[in-house]
Image (cartoon, rainbow, N blue to C red; front, side):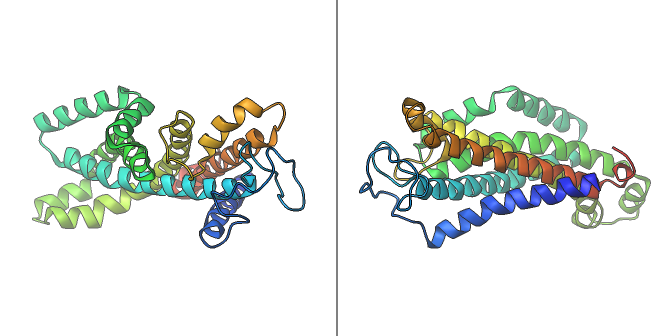
Length: 270
């Protein structure tokens, strides 16, 4: 029951933020660049959460920030899964010399700070939503590749896979029929966790001024802009921080629930 509660709580929290992001595609209380509100207004009937130091509606900017967070999380996870998954599959099927080389390269990439690698990519491409997705996705791909490599090696060592290989089954058939069905539960859990890390990485880049440029309103940028007025208008810093925590905690609860569903040995006890 406790595991089920955690899973449901994760689904609800993630669905809340995703729902806000989807609504922002069609409706926001005010245009993103609208500055007709008073400077640092408190919450009221006209501006439900108040305004920032330029008179922009805070609720509108938070909704746009949810859209950016979800877009970066999904885009980075998709890119990391494709690049890292392919690299991990190649390493798993490679000969020993090539496998050792790829493993050493992956260890070097993982040891390199993710945020620093993302900063280098963004600095080379320019600050934009696409650059943030590419930077975080590429940084994530090394982690995905190493996990994929380990899982593929484990599956290939199974007796039934050895029998299929010796009987002349083609490599594509082995991958689709044996490898992918056995590694996807673990990969799904890991990618769910990577989603939360991608959201945090994007917020960090935006806080440093390397995220999507204005009028895009990333939660990290909102936190950076609100730090100078945190004492006079604290909701400007509290609201994006709360939403960031809600999304990351929700994703982690969801990943933990998926782990229990995917691994039968965890259903009886934790």
